[in-house]
Length: 489
Image 1 (cartoon, rainbow, N blue to C red):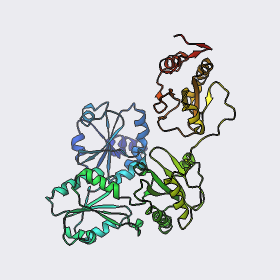
Image 2 (cartoon, rainbow, N blue to C red):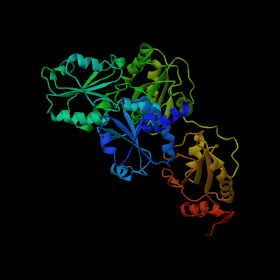
Image 3 (cartoon, helix red, strand yellow):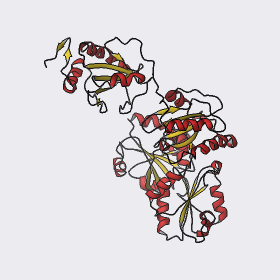
Image 4 (cartoon, helix red, strand yellow):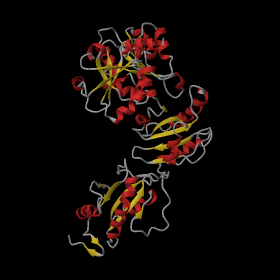
């Protein structure tokens, strides 16, 4: 019986025996198969690509979770060059969102199964939901997230077409709906004459007495102007910062109060502290500082790493992070009347606050040829106006740094008699790197010459002794003293 069953299974088409949640598309069938799906995420890949291999199991898991809602597909660009070239694929993996067979937008979201699922779930349905009645509008805005609703005079409105184009581009970030009944906006515009507009409804959970729940947009409607309007008004006076929107919020100098914020399970407690931040923030609006609140647990590792702060208990922990990379922390306990926060801000705006700098202790002895620099001593050593300084940013766990160490020590010993030059190093994993030094990997080396301390030069040369000496001979402000003798080269 079993041999017969196995023979029967072997005779069945492969598609009937294999679960294929991810479609395999190619030059011959891409157009007509893609057109069958309202929303489809396509992965353009190469079998040899390491990043593609890493993505593959996550992509498969997401495809299973999205089955029936969003189709996931893949194209092997080593076998189907025509399709990949047609869609401008130049690197692997490239992910694109298609709607009814048309290239709609690049996929720029997370590349984990959960991330893909969350992003693509928002891609289902129309870019903008059509609302016919007041009940439809109320049901749409009675949601956890903010809502952007356009109200237009008719289907032929030029503003409507522009609004729908914007919704198509921005739907991954925001919720859009539209109506052709101008009267739906009357309640919110407080105007006797109905006219086209866009209404931005902030989330109901964030309602407060310090700002309006609805903001009206009446300017010339373009994709750019609508995007700016949403960006400037969506979050209000004190938005909730998350891991997803933090980069958008941090384009400005930003104060954040971190506490046990959870609007799903504790909306009353979450708003309790937010309202106290807003009360103080309203007194300092228009002075170039933005405000936010965040869940302390989500940012705990960042608070520990960047500010040296621990959990801190039930009371909010308050920080300021500026666009220039300056950091401040409120050391006084957050008082329930907000007075401590007010004092903190007054000190900040009057320049009385001392910046927080993550730094190892300044070494008591620093007599080795390679001078140890920490964040607290950076200005004193590296920005010494009378010295040229070669500074290496390293990490103790970096194998390349360990390989460089004997060469770097030899360089320092070779130039130890030169009174005009310092060979230094700083553990960038344990100290804040000053603004102007782009340290993305280790080791990273910069040269700061006399007279140009605000223009550090990144060292991109070889890592042998002769390479460093050749570079310093060309860049140093004085002739080098090599091995105790003035360099004649």
